[in-house]
Image (cartoon, rainbow, N blue to C red; front, side, top):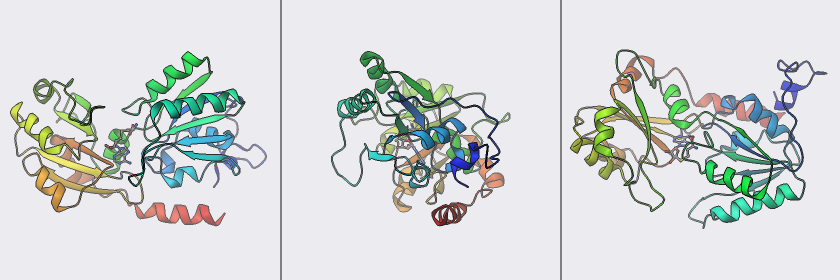
Length: 285
Ligand code: SAH
């Protein structure tokens, strides 16, 4: 099914009676694409894909999602890929502003949620400064959607009453020094760490120094909710060795805490190969 038919009254789409806002020319919509599986797009996101003139996306947006763009929409890649130099943040914001001022419907599509470690705030502020009207469409962040697809509940009553989202990589390229790792280790029983693969050894050291046990369960959720989705379970003490032994690479979410054990019962409910058939079906349409 295309997104078009979802909203098409004549074709009797299931969401046809929904009145979603039209995408006015000259606006920028800052939209979360979710972690990968196109089924995790919001209706606002699907509707925006159907109307946009230009889709400016980053490297984390899965192909399967981009295929839902309106035929004829211009697709612009703005991110890092394959070691090529990345478009700089000022260049990206400039481009969004120029396209909007030229009267385009500009869809700025970001992996996960635009305001979770995604520089969405910087872009939104630049739009405000330039007087460009915008809308924000939240998305399912990898730290929520990826955990669910891995069979790891973000919270469970018997394990945790708190959860922290943390980045393991600061703008400086190092482990962020504006995170009090000791306080974090003591306060949040479940830690969901983005961009943690590279500096994993330093992060593990800080959490152990803050009092976490080396036996505590940890999982890597790689390319979550995409056709390449893979989960590697480990412990805090063995995490670095397991990362290397299993070839864990970005993008991956690292989750630390007792909730990881629930995967023994809940894991496996989702099979990434369903996305292969989804892609084949939609390509055949
Ligand atoms: N805005 C995004 C996060 C961007 S930061 C979101 O809300 O999900 C980039 C980091 O996000 C990656 O290094 C990785 O840690 C995580 N990430 C994003 N998409 C992912 C995916 N599909 N699977 C695993 N991790 C992902």
